[in-house]
Amino acid sequence: MFSRILIANRGEVALRVIRAAREMGIETVAVYSTADRHSAHVRLADQAICIGRGPASDSYLNIPRIISAAEVANVDAIHPGYGFLAENAHFAEVCRSCNIEFIGPSVEAMNLLGDKVACKQLAIRQKVPTAPGSKGKITDEDDAVKLARDIGYPVIVKASAGGGGRGMRVAHNDIALRSGIKQAMAEAEAAFGDASVYIEKFIEKARHVEVQIIGDQHGNICHLFERDCTMQRRHQKLIEEAPCPVITEDERKELCGAAVRLAKAAGYYNAGTVEFLYDAVSRKFYLMEVNTRMQVEHPVTEMITGIDIVQTQIRVAAGEKLPFTQRQVQRNGHAIECRINAEDPARNFAPSPGKIEQFDMPGGFGVRVDTHCHSGYVVPPNYDSMIAKLIVHKPDREQAIIAMRRALREFRVEPIKTTIPLQADLMLNGNFRRSDVDIHFVERLLERKPG
Image (tube, rainbow, N blue to C red; front, side, top):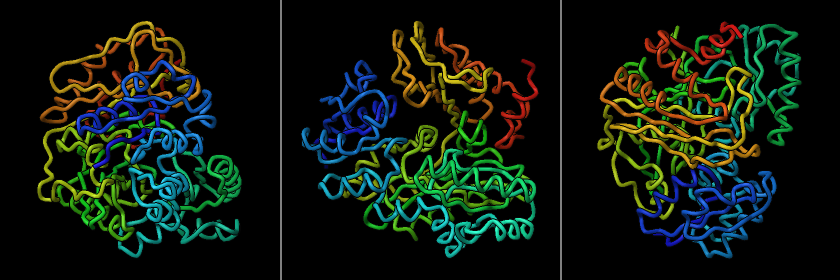
């Protein structure tokens, strides 16, 4: 087992890794920017090293500085968390060349699954359902138009190398498709340094359902069931839950089996997520992408399975076998997570950085809060706006919704704007309570709201 690891991240995920490692008797090294000098992960780690100024390009995305910190601190491994360098195969390769274990999948698996076109081709060979679309990257607009007419509009243009809603455009006709290809390519080049795109049939009544997988370096791989991440805005998740409330046990078995099959074909190990779109009309699943890292919403899976995903990540990165078999992974109850973001939903989710003067967290049976914030904390403008994750776990979904509504009403974050009021309203929404939603539901709801 490792004796010392470095966390190449910040905020609540850095704290999550520090706590998991400390329970395993592993020392931790935090890295931080000048904007985060007073952050909780800096105080709680065994050692902390400043790696640059506030902008992420000068700190959390600066590979040479992170590697230098790791070498100075003499660490055995680096945990990337999520975001920043978590899915950067070059970073994983640099770690390997420096004899530092990367707590994540292999470079080869990251490269294969990180290219959405190559991933889709692998999925087709493994009989994993994929949406109708291009077999490879789009090289000719006329060919793209012909294909779109064959599979039927609307279609969606997607960046081959990225995610998070960047490099994506929906087209309902030829003109929009030609324009969307140009826009998506420009956005993908700026965001990922790779302008290549592909197209797929756009599923208008889709849910976002994903499967948590985890494997070891001995060929063992398990799924930890699925999560429903349908409640989003601009392709960014607001509310996640596990298990998915609308699929049958047969569909669950098919979905999770497909995820494991794809992961095995890719030679995957460590934690990852296989993401699907679920067509609520046809009740069919289509592969969307594979995230080669731990997800923000991993706590809902931890709550229903009782498995510490971060500690398991560390164990398999150190060469240990999975401490459980697929048969031993069982579901218990229902969990919901709300991502608490420093954003103003009334202003199109504009960021709301600034000083938090009051930060009162909820509690009670079955309530968990993952956060790095506190009264007096200043939310910097440099990074992602998520300031906390509120998770509840109850015997069934209805009880989980009631508990989440109560917890959101207790959660006080002032004076900055947050998503808490919106999420509290959503807990009362009839469509949400009936699970009659799709990935565009929140956006349609806000468009109808006056003011």
